Each structure stands twice: as C-alpha cells, then as structure tokens.
Image (cartoon, rainbow, N blue to C red; front, side, top):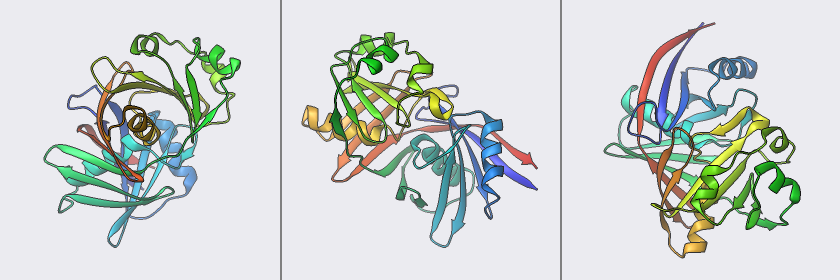
Length: 259
C-alpha cells in the first residue's frame, strides 16, 4: 500500500517559515490507527488526510498523539495541495469535517480559510495558570482552548512556560495573546498534552482570537502575527459567525509512504 504525501509550509511565502503540515490524499479511508501511526512518524504538529466524496472532500487531522476536531494550517496546506498539485478546478474547495463544513478560497497566491467562529467565556485567573506560564495574565477566557491575555507583545515573546504544568489543564491548548507592535495582535500557542509543545502558526486558535480582538478593537478586519520561532502572518476577518483567515503556502516536499 502506498500513500502520496506532501509537506507544505503554511502561513508563509518562504520555505522554512510558517507552520509545516503533512498532507495525504487518499482514495479511501485506512484504519484510524494507520493514520495515527503516520502522523506519529511524521512528527509534525498536524498531518491531514482527505478523501473526495462527490462535490466535497472529507478531511481529518492528526497530531503525533491524537485526532483533533479542527486544524487551520493543515487545512490551508490541503487546499494548497489540491490547487497546485492535484489540479482542482475553480477557486473554491469544500471540506467536511468534525467541525462541519469548511472552505478554502483562492485569490491568486493567497488562500483563505472559511471557518466557524468560536465562542469564549471569561474564567477566573488561576494562580496555577500564571505559574505554568511564568507571568500573571490580565484576563483569561475559555473556548476549546484557554485564551490568556497579556498587556504587551514583549511579554508574549519572553514567555517560557513550564510545559509539564500546561499538560494538566482541561483544554486542548493554551493561547497567549497581546496587542501587537506592528499588527493588531500577536499570539503564541502551546498544546503539550497532544504532543505539540509550541505550534508555529495555529489557524484554529484564530477562530477564537479573531472574534475576541474584533470585539476588543471594534474592527472586523485584523492583521496578526504568531510569534513562534518560525513565525507566521495571518490576515483575518470576522464575518458574522464565520472567521476568514488568509495566508500563503509553499511546498517543501512531495513523496510516497510505503506501508
């Protein structure tokens, strides 16, 4: 059994930037354990698998440890593969996923994710969260992840969280964010409990970040940076109960998995 594989750097226009994702087009679904083993072997934050089904593609994502219900950069990477390597016609791709219908739209070399916006609720600032992050937050909110607000970009850059402590929280990941110096906002994302100590660029986190900052800044179009070592730039818009997240992508490799 052979499976095509592409590795794509998402949310960047240069190799070795943004967030690398593996993408595996399939003709039919193998056992879930096979996909999990491939994701573990790839050891990237996400590996995406998709199968064509009439007018849409069924899409799934795996970290090195678990299957997740939403991933932005691997969806962007999947759209890039379909448009640039598999000859998908037109400028729109419809995916079906555990998070419902998702779209990738193409405008020249810019790809836009159309994702559901996430709701969030304020929670009490806990000493344990401040201890794990090594700094006291201004506010804390919860959606799928914790969204932790700090006063400035410098604090976000200098955070050195204790990853073993972050594993103990009952969320998929921890988003830290602050107003940006050259953008509307900046962020970082930690998810050690699912095998991702720090994710380079996290599209799914922006389904919470965008409505949060749109409300805070009273504007729907937002420019964002994720301040990981690789870094990533995102162009975002709140559109009702949907979030549009745009970026570029480049192919790093094409290959074949033999099983």
